[in-house]
Length: 279
Image (cartoon, rainbow, N blue to C red):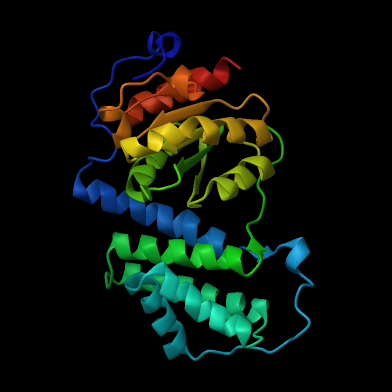
């Protein structure tokens, strides 16, 4: 459902709602997302300025290839608390943050990519593993490279899941529609409101798209959307909502502080363009 002003401008579409695409399309879109964005972005992280000099020890950590592979397996097969506990143990042992990132996390991310290429793991496991590596990267004081600071010639969108769900598959499918329409797409895999706000603050986006997987998440959206709009580098940023939650949730975009709601990928691209062009 869209707010009435936006819906009246939106053409009808016959594509299936995102979240229900064919299996081969799912795999292809997720493969593209993992290979072209998630892993490269993870590998380009660098120490946060406030954390660069936080350690007064330089104990290096040089895991073997087998240990890197074991860590990658740990990330896809265990609970996040167990993975974090492993890294916390390294920190308690005074292991240098750079060693953890450069010698463990980065090689493990590459190893996951190789596992994906060799079809030794499925997209759910790869996604979970990368999400856990992403969380650890933040834990040890690393951040991602900031993108453009001002508007560019191409429209730029941040796609993310609302905190509380990890609807990466839906985001992967939607990102393909936007890319085919000429948008620059950043799929943000952060799982907290704070991390999403940091990304919105650090880079220019013409629009933010949020995927909401569960109806229980709808009540928290007004606060999330208000904060994203408050901190965004683009002071007039529109927010477009989508995802399975809105197949049954009866609410308007305006009531949530958003600028539109859609459950159809093609329609979403068309509405997004209308919202940006109207600013």
